[in-house]
Length: 305
Ligand SMILES: NC(=O)c1ccc[n+]([C@@H]2O[C@H](COP(=O)([O-])OP(=O)(O)OC[C@H]3O[C@@H](n4cnc5c(N)ncnc54)[C@H](O)[C@@H]3O)[C@@H](O)[C@H]2O)c1
Image (cartoon, rainbow, N blue to C red):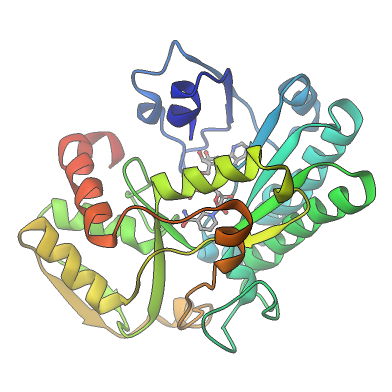
């Protein structure tokens, strides 16, 4: 996101806590160090938010605790970051910059186990984990602040997003990250279950959607699903990854019990609304996206382990 904004000539401030358990990585801004302002601070700290928000045209509200399992083991940290801090960000915007356009990264996790496929924005919301509930509250706060205070906020419900610079040292962001790391380390990776259907968004396509949501006035107050071009089962994804890598191995096994309890089964999005309203469409195929991701990490693996 920051790279794309800098290329477009924007003045960019990055706010990140860089807590080691989460996805922040200084190497991600290699080459950009002198072109962005970096502020190491935590969105749970309401006092620093005012400085960050004042005077900005756009706020890409992406900071979050992303691990579903962590949210079950430590629900209050997830609550603080994904729920309470979101309200505090919006309150700060309302008081000090009510015109700021806010794009919030919501998640398909809030739907829970789909009742029907593909899932459109009118599908019932029934999260299966604490993270889903807190992200849902975060999203609803954004909608509320639009409806009541006319803050130009919108939300994108992201699905599995992948690409260069993602977190691969563990599965806290997505299982795809661990698969990629193990593959590049020459180790077999595990596919749990395997028949689950999922859709994937390549990072550049996701960034494009976030940008469109920021610049198109018709996005304000809207909630959009973001999907991808292709739907695939996890076992087919694993096969494709091995093929694109030119080798590698995986093993299929039963879901671990703690994961099974919070698994959502099959999911893929109906993202017609964002396509029609903002003119978004994905440009990078799953095969090309995986290739670009593997190429990046092959060269830069040591910075992400
Ligand atoms: N990647 C996906 O597949 C996906 C899917 C659905 C939703 N999302 C949402 O997109 C957003 C971005 O996720 P990502 O995939 O880029 O993950 P990420 O972990 O790479 O990025 C999140 C960033 O937030 C920072 N952060 C965490 N807690 C913070 C805090 N308290 N204060 C300041 N910074 C903090 C982390 O250091 C990290 O850099 C998240 O809100 C996530 O819920 C991502």
